[in-house]
Amino acid sequence: MPASIGIFVLSELTGTLRDTIRALHERFDPKLGRLTPPHLTITGSSGVGMIDARTPIADLRAALEPIAATTPPLTLAIGAPHRFPGTEIVSLPLDPHGPLRTLHERIAASGLRFARSRFAFSPHITLSYYPTLTRERERELLALHIDTPLIVDRLQVYLTRDPQPARQLFALALDETRPVAAEVTAPSDRARS
Image (cartoon, rainbow, N blue to C red; front, side, top):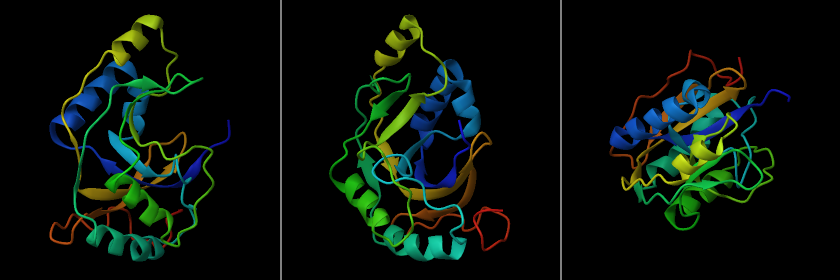
């Protein structure tokens, strides 16, 4: 399988929900837990593909800052776990309509260059990605029930170079009244180093 290199926009989970998903990753998919923090992917896997890894950070910021500044934080209900057909992937789905879709579409229409995605926008929190599931493990995962809502109050922009762990480039608060740390990456105008 060829290495995957590109830029994703996601929202890292926080608080109790982050801790719950992290514990599930440790139990069911430690490799996934090592490679990325618990998160919701907003662009990069469905709806639109990854952003071109050669995109300068200044261009990423110019496209995403106005979107973040004019999007209020979102509180989203998490659905019952499901297995993606024909795969070993188990995830917690979120409603693909409403404010989350609006955010996704605003980013997709921002002028950034995205790769094509083979899948319709299907927002989710991945629980298990890498291991082959036994019937027992699958039953355990599908029986989970998570009542804690997902709060999306910031966007994190990540460069991924599989199989290496993803690297955060920067973060933006949703709603300009709640700033988060600016640059996270080494000073460079290029996302790809």
